[in-house]
Length: 329
Image (cartoon, rainbow, N blue to C red):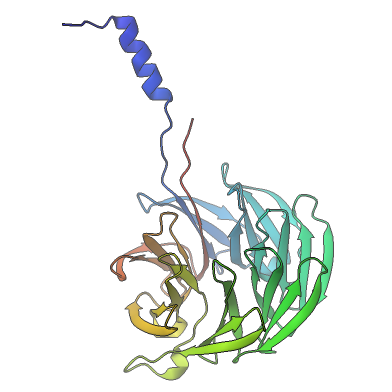
């Protein structure tokens, strides 16, 4: 029988202790009324920190390397930049007035910011904070989405009811697509062959072909017993490798499930009150949706398309961002 010395045992223990240990993902939720970001552990679903921000944080987005979280503080006229390791605000970007939503290019170098009060899209160098361009768009821009190939950025203007297409190389508008009333968010398919735009008051999603910048399909919503004006699509997120989309529907207290190939609604999931925006977990198995009027976050199981848990966050939660778990070495 082979025997191990004490030294060997200790060395083995040290080796095992130094191996990479996986950590659960981290969920960030912006709380519009509290002026905070709630930080939730993805494994325990417990709040691990609450970060104070400038006034009225709404849109939040992570850098592609997950090192920074950008928070649009609309009433503070600023973008707070949070270090995701220390969970501290390290700097601020001079975004211009009333930033609401933004998106970062795939290289993590440029941020595109919707300035709602000025009807502008501010294009900024993230590292230096230098404003590279200001692109006039329609009234009350909100949704921002950079295409996967980094050629275009889509901006939605709520009062003009348009999706505006910016050429990222020249910082110029190349198309204006009329959609239904009060468009809120824009989302590109993974292959960049479709641009989806939600219209809150119009109660539809428009699917746009980037080859022609024309609408190829409009998707509506209908739930027995729910008034049509309560079916307000706001956020949109692709799931199951883009084969389905989840759409929080505001006052209806539901999330719609869309078959993206058929462009048809196949189900509705009852969640908290006034679901606004959501985000898919890093493994694609869960969907986290912020419920503005119940001050919580509903967790939806992607396999079963059932709501499984409610997690309390701050007051008037608005946006969600998810940082994948990373190993400690």
